Amino acid sequence: MSQPPLSFPKNPLGSTRKSSVTATDDVTSQATARTGLNAQSPLRSSTLASQSAPTLGTGITRTTPPPSQPYTRPQSTQGQTAFGAGATRSLRPTPTAPGTGIARTSGVSGQSATGSPLGSGIARTLQAGSATTTPSRPIAPSFSSRATNPTAPSTPRMPTLRPTSATPPSGGSAFRKDMQITNEEFLHLRDFIYEQCGIFIAENRKYLVENRLSHRIKELHLKSFNEYYKFLRYDANRQNELTHLFEVITTNETSFFRNPPQLEVFQNIVLPDILDRQRKSGNKRLRIWSAGCSTGEEPYTLAIIISEVLKGELSGWDVCINAYDLSEAVLAAARRGVYNAYSLRTTPKDIVARYFIQDGNQFTVKPELKKLIRFGPINLNDKEQCRRVEKSQIVFCRNVIIYFDDAMKRRVINAFYDNLEPNGVLLIGHSETLHNISRAFQLEHHTGTIVYRKAN
Image (tube, rainbow, N blue to C red; front, side, top):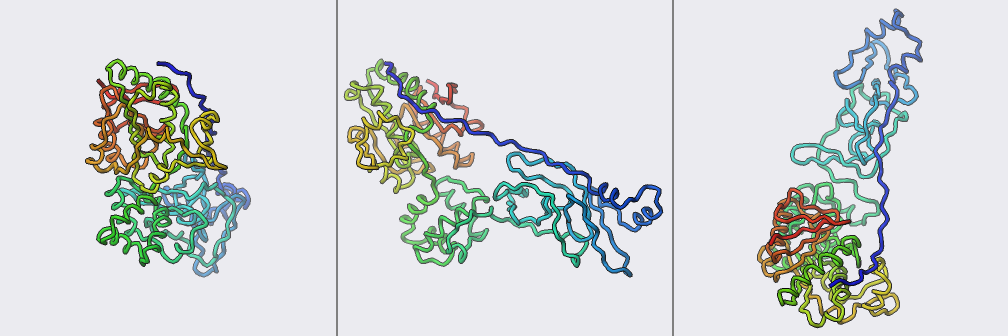
């Protein structure tokens, strides 16, 4: 049964940042031109003979003064960067790493294009035996001259490589200055969190663990992250603390009518098709699983669309949206169903008027909408909990699996497949994909979204 579609707002497309290539003139040739030396000059020949040959692949010529003479710093040229006392470098065009604005350099290991040692703005993360550099913020390469210490050794200092976290954002609490998480503590807590709920936290997000868990440590009057880890493992009250842990590590940014193109496909194609199938079978029963429902905006949005499509038929249908989440705190907010104007920023005004009760700046979901939804806790890493969810015709799991590694994604997607009835549909976030995760679904491409259908 076709119904007039809701008026979904359109989101503007964002701009795309383009990478650039940074190029400089050959500094060595500039220096030669300024001194006026030519290939036939005896002075030039004797000077070159006293210099050590460039190290293969480094692009550095080291100038070593005779022991009997006092050290004289080489004259720098316009646009040259000093890489240590007595060292000059030919700066060749170097490609910029895509999307970062950082020019990659070769030659002096452990130094950036500006001559800054590793760690002053770039954090190095060691994963699986390989070293990659992760910028704390976009860094524009600069080739301006820097002052050097004339007493420093001629060979550039090599930094010690060790795993470090990405530079945390400014404005951290004073508590962080007194207590910082060690690499060992981070790995213990990261593995514990993954073991409990399947959320994987990369090493370059270590500062987030430090920021978010430090408040729990303070609340429990513990002295270190190691004590907190032991508390989670062995304390008699560890189950209650797990609830708080899940609340602080999960992200709950959402809104009503999020991703309008996908919701249009749900309203105009997916939902009418399933309703027609149910009518023909004589079973007017509709079950939708909203996995990772957060504070309720998604399941309430689905309930509004179902109400708009069925209209007067709604009372003759058995409709239930099973909305589950890991965090008890967000579930409590979802059950209350009270929102501010920001949460409704993408909701058509006539929809707000029909399905919400306004009281100042607060908007409360009407009771007839609430009765279509059943909220409850679930851990998607728990197979038994997933099996207890009643069979569904539609599963919504948007912006959830992006926090999982591939192994966890496969477990969760398999659980959704098992839960769906034949011809059932899975809808995931617009930035998510099942590529290399599952081939069990038939893909249906629509404008703005992909529908994953379970074969009959």
